[in-house]
Length: 206
Image (cartoon, helix red, strand yellow):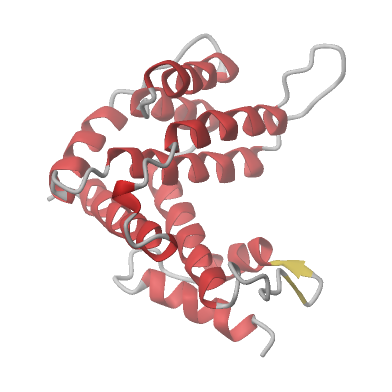
């Protein structure tokens, strides 16, 4: 099995676990993951910049974070409870290796959003096109995805749903702590996700 497929299997497993933590019967709820995709695309466009009447510089770090969020929803759309993670990973790997790009990043992003609005699908080829045009590879995606997914678990375990979670620690938002934790870890380590969680736990106010 290729490294990319192994990483995609891990991400699919983690996505199902996260969705199940939020709602045990998530398969049967008909959540509109496609809607979450196009809304995130619109938010990302603001970070990238699209207004021709004022000077704007793309916030690349924020765009990458938004792409990672979109991948969470894209995976959720693909998981059907019947197809194996291995088969889904192979399918995604094939599509991600054929990036489909329009004239510029904004137009490629619109293709991704358009598929979500019109077809209610995750267009992995357009997603890969966005990744390529922003200078992001599968390792960046994996690092960002596992980190954010682990943070989502951490939030749930520490009262996010109940409203008791503390989002700012020692003057930094949890997302900023996450970036610092991930920088000091080996992303290829089999316990990468567990190590991210442990790193967050060490920093979180008791």
